[in-house]
Image 1 (cartoon, rainbow, N blue to C red):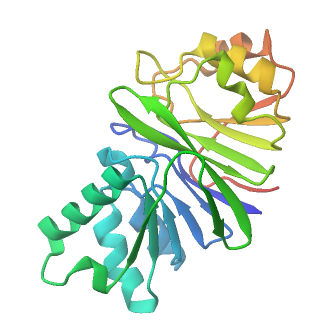
Image 2: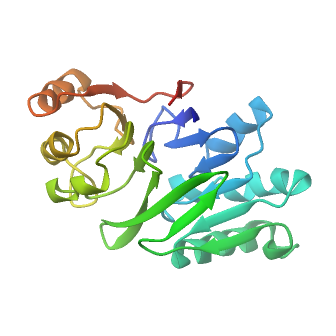
Length: 229
């Protein structure tokens, strides 16, 4: 598995919206900063997994579909309400062509297992304030959780993976540092990438807090990073 990090920030960041690209064919989330990066690398993913329908995760989708549909028929996956919002976004911006004519849309639910490019992708439903967001677990290789309110008991979702991408934030919509530290201490992935973190976060302080409980390695994801798992 080869992962390109396209961004690691929230909606109002200077560091590009949180998104990763797997093996250049599977994209997770399509915020407004994503199309430019993909086009500049001449990469057109065939599969797009959407965690939820907030703008910094789907607003780049119409621009992507304009280009992707010329090369292939992309497949977009999401919870039913996320797919509904994605279709509405297209119809309100480029509605001259019905979106079903240029892309396939597939809904999933909690516990579903998707077969994508040889990976078994398990879908987990977690809360993000009043809405739900999707956590993705690729076999026992990698798990990806952004905009999620995890607590210590959710560690079972992430046990056994080699790499965990997990957000950190404040308030009821996100996983605060103390809860993330407890979760990591129980899940114990060898490597954790912090994603969807604000520009004003004290990175050294956060790492110190996590390392009181967690023995694995902590890295802050940044646009342009790549890793092989």
